[in-house]
Amino acid sequence: MNHFYYNNNVLFCEGVPVADIAAAVGTPFYLYSTETLTRHFRAFDGAFTLPHLTCFAVKSCSNIALLHLFGTLGGGADIVSGGELYRALKAGIDPRKIVYSGVGKSEAEMRFALEAKILMLNVESHQELQALQNVAAALGVTAPVSFRVNPDVDPKTHAYISTGLAKNKFGIPIQDALDSYLAARQMKNIEIVGVSCHIGSQLTDVSPFVESLQKVRCFTERLKEAGIHISCLDLGGGVGIRYKNEQPPLPAAYATALEQEMHGLDCTLILEPGRVIVGNAGILVTRVLYTKQGGKKFVIVDAGMNDLARPSLYDAFHAIQPVVRRGQEVEVADVVGPICESGDFLSRGKEVPLCAQGDLLAVMSAGAYGFSMSSNYNSRPRVAEVLVKGDSFHLIRRRETYEDLVAGEMIP
Image (cartoon, rainbow, N blue to C red; front, top):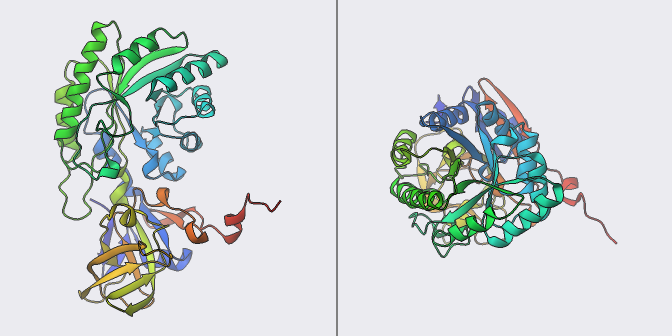
């Protein structure tokens, strides 16, 4: 459930008309609902009864206002860069609730994480382990480590967001991972605390999660036989949302399936939800600049692929709704942006509202991997972000200016 709805044919976010926000901040902009974010986080986190920690996947939506909200709800952060660690700390997230994943951590990023005293780093190769040992030794500290194992499970999702197959770059093959743990045990500045696994994003079936957990559980038994005991089991994220006709599992069903497989394991379950929390809690609001008829109908708007990359990158579907409804008429058209690429579209060859110049449109389900994947391509300033709470709205990121585009650049 989300808190975007029509009242007298006007789209509202909680208690605020979306058109009023557009008049105040201009277009395009991302708009988030505090009530929806809170409801989704609590529904997910509250579905689990065993000891667990919900670490929000910062990559999905990284504004510090949202991270702060999740921190106040008891959440932590799943990060994949030093920048995301900086954001999480700036937002007030407890460092002991931060998990650092990713295949390419630099030594500087490792140092930052160790100095911040985060919960653990998910190591993905033996060379990374050796680098972490060197950094920890230089600092005179012990690095808390989990290895990300690759269980070779098909998540049945888009190839670009599949991460748990043997052909993917992520993790250590589960059949080889014991050697990594044995090597880590011999290192003076490494403390083994967990096992990590992440198989993909936008999964709409529980069975791949169960299959991966079964494999990881068997692996923990091998660790125990080798005298290695873990306190954390990180199963990553990946639960999908409904963009159109998908039927993703409800949090309760997902939690029940995992907890059945976790029975008897004496460790804390770490979860890394992202899209399932923020996806349907945010929209992208854009204005129609022009319409034209060529070989097909085009609706040209002021938001482009640099603002929302998912349609161009994954051919992803996002429903498009009018901010002010004027009847139920629809037409088949391409909704395209100003970018100089044929791949610049928000919707292509699908039914969209009948549009006129100046109309406001809402691109739905844009809260996840929307702003966080946006860019300055074509030297376009990145858009504003707005958070609604009840009957008020707050600018949580100002729109970039042309001056921002060249800040840091210099002519020699």
